[in-house]
Image (cartoon, rainbow, N blue to C red; front, top):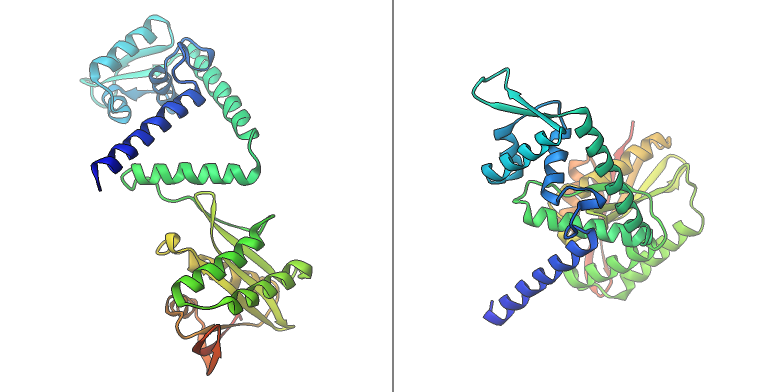
Length: 309
């Protein structure tokens, strides 16, 4: 990385820091219209999580200078919002806890924080809220030394998701396998048929969200009265290795079983090695294969199946 690039990135992070501290109001004289600074509010929050806290543990949690913590606690004690004593486990260790007045002070901070964040999110659409939460999760994961795992959930498709399924299939398969627009057209037909009139009792689809943004999908559709078909399994490259593919397939199997199907099938191509491994782990077995020329390439189609009983 050049010195110019490094300086530009540092400037961007500093600019974001100035912007975000202004948005959440931490530079004001009192946080959330209270007499407490941001650090003092953090101390109150930690103390509110339990009846008493050992002071050394409080310092480690907050990663603060011992003298600074002592000055904050001394002020809190003088204001009557904390009480200090000796640990029943170790007489050498000091413990601190909130008084009734301290818990009321924390409740005020907590309520006002909830109100402000609710108002902040209320300015955004549902889609933009998911994008914001996803970006925040990414920042926490990247800067948290791996301590914060990704936030993953499976949900039904909402407005805009069907277009995303078509676009991501077309883009990813073109990039990774060189498939042409014929494949994207196939995906578009499958998605359009599902969106136009699927039976919700016997057909379903799921979007896998990672840190608030779409990262994968799968569809379960009716092939005949006793047979379900798994279609359009996809996991974004950035989300691979987290078990999303297996979770999507397991959800599809659960739904098919609950919907009364006796077996489930799928169609794929032999070049999709990672997907085949997911199917094998989920109990599918290869039922047949056939060469064909599609999407601009010579391929080998495969049919996989498994019982649901």
